[in-house]
Amino acid sequence: MPTDEEFLAYNQGVIREFRANHGVVSRPPFPILLLTTTGQRTGRQTTVPVGFAVDDEKRVFVVASKAGAPQHPAWFHNLRANPTVTVELGDSSYQARAVVTSGEERERLYRLVSDGTSAYEKNTDRVFPVVVLEGVPAPT
Image (spheres, helix red, strand yellow):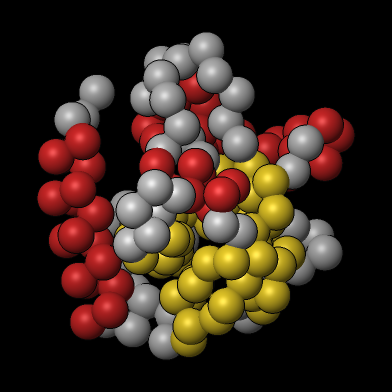
């Protein structure tokens, strides 16, 4: 399991590449967006690269997997405390409202991406939260 410092270094490299190449990155091998949240304790803005998917209703959503770590990622705690986030997707930036799903809605969305997160699930007992980013248009 990578350390927090290793996650931070990796994420900073992905963010630089994303912004330099108009949303195109060589790693990871799945579509990502940049998610900026406001710290629940610090009030500081923090940006992280996050894999995303689009459901049949054209809603953009993310899964808080943190590579199977035993705790949820910090960005998830931040958006629960402050659900207004900024999303960078390609060359565009959007203000969005982060809505944590539950029940059948969570299960339905998670099934759409579970192939990509199933290896991570084996590392933890926690349920990965699924978050819809309201106000972000699906990429075409």
